[in-house]
Length: 142
Length: 142
DNA sequence: ATAAATTGCTATGTGGCATAGCTTTTATGT
DNA sequence: ACATAAAAGCTATGCCACATAGCAATTTAT
Image: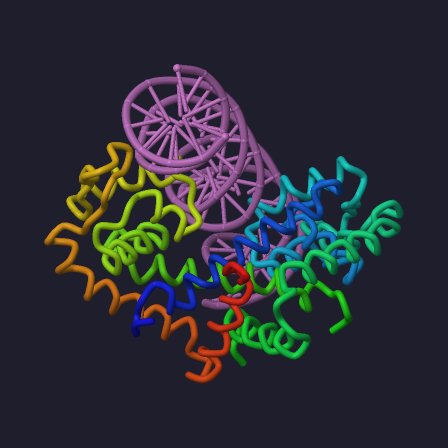
């Protein structure tokens, strides 16, 4: 494998691995009609009840322009509630509905199954290493 | 970080890291008007002169339906030549043009710069580990 | 010889992401 | 205090990667 062969590029391999994961996610979560983005939104709202929409955007690296219609979709499906913020009229505060809170454990389990499937060739230790390195790539310095 | 928190999911972190890499690639290669996909095609044709279009699809994990217009684009830009195969009239054989062959080293260097930038927090050893683990994820078993 | 597979293609839909531009509300600076 | 800037949320729109369906030509398999 030459110095800068395509195969030796991490960016290329990131793209291929991510595409495979995306694909596998779709297979596992198709019945729940959740895509990685929408699942990510629900999971974060679940982990941080009452989170502001802008903060959700920031944490997920999304633009509010793209978040807005997805929130509307989740709201219409009865999974997310948008409430006004007490002190700041610009702010929306997000929470899962009761139904979504009850469904989340099952969805999280499906995601665990999905991860176990597409990572089946990696040991527990290798998965921990991979997680650490990936976070080094995309998270903020400091 | 909880067991199956979003942050702890490798799929999510893959997606974030890949998105950042894509973004950085676009910055570095915008002047060459090459995207990751088109660069990948050129790089592989460069590494395997005379490769068949179907084989290129297979190696890059693309459908020929999506490859065809990209090959047309690269051909119109004078970077790729499509020739008929001697023994099989269905097959197209691909080569870089002289211009593309001369430009490739510069592009490869730009990609190297790009990788050094978005991987600057990883040591050489960590990069090798990451490469190995990513390849374990998406390449065929056996 | 007929059926099946391969190759390359067009047309078309979807999903993620980007920018531009807008309104409303809050924060800042003189 | 008032003007300006910034933040929050939104709509509209376009680009790109990728998927499926279907087609024609050719080659391989039965």
